[in-house]
Every structure is written in C-alpha cells, then in structure tokens.
Image (cartoon, rainbow, N blue to C red; front, side):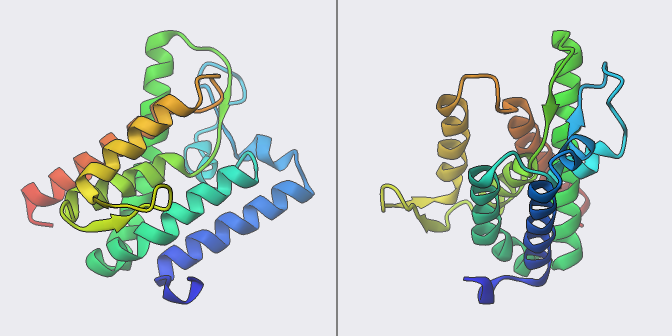
Length: 191
C-alpha cells in the first residue's frame, strides 16, 4: 500500500508517524503539541497547527493514517499536491477553530485536543463531494458504498461510538464543515 501513496500523503504519514514515535520516547512533548482550550494559560496559537500531528495512542494514529492513505491519494492525484496540502491543513486548522468556537459558546474551560481527525474528516468530506458516486469497499462489512453515503456513515459512527467525552466530536464536525466550505469556495471561484 505504501508504494501507491502520493508524495504529500506519504510525507504527512511519515511526519505524523515520526511525531508519534517522539511522543512515545518523550511523552511530555504531547502536552506542547496538543491544542488547549483558549481559556487556559496553556493555549498557544501554534497549537492550531501542531495538534494535527500528535496522537493519543496507537489506534488513534492508525485509524487516522489508514483513512489518509486510502482517500488522500485520490484527492491529491485529482487536485495536485499543493492544493491537496492546502486543503488538508486548512481543514485541520479550521476544525480546531470550529472546536474552539464551540468551547467558547458552551463555556468549556478545560481539556486538550490532539490528532489529525479534523483534517481527516475534511478530506472525507472533500472526497464525498468531489467523487459522490465513486464506490468504495468497506472493510467491515465488506460491501460497496458510494462516497456520498460513506461520509454520512463515518460521521454517524463517530458520534455513536464514544460518548465518554474523550473525543473531540466538534473538531470532526468542524473538519467536515470546513472541507465542504473549501469545496464550495473553489467551485464558486473556479479555483
């Protein structure tokens, strides 16, 4: 599978993997890379970017990088490397900003966020909107599903799977919303 990866996707996976290894060797580094609530003294603006490359565990990084490896190359080949990288980063930063906005509205005061999930949900939305009728094969159950339905299935799963409060559901939603807005902007401007 690594051989079919496009350059930007491969580099994002390598960078994210390297950051994860550094986190395992030096666990406190994760506290500097994570995104903290804007109402805490731990918040730093650079965290809007760095949180995407830090992860909370093996399964966390594994699921995010598998999604990136399967969907990212299709979008990168279609949009080109620069446009794909811009989309990924803007969706990830937008997901963080969306989550911060929700935190401010709800009065949340604590917590930290890390992981590429916001950017991943952005590319899932980008994939579903750009290639709505492309069929992909699910792993479990092994059935084909159109991309436009896949984004709803995955979005619904994230909301149903963990209600413990340890998942930044609004970042996932934010990544999808920002991804959709980017596509709308590109279509409206012809870019």
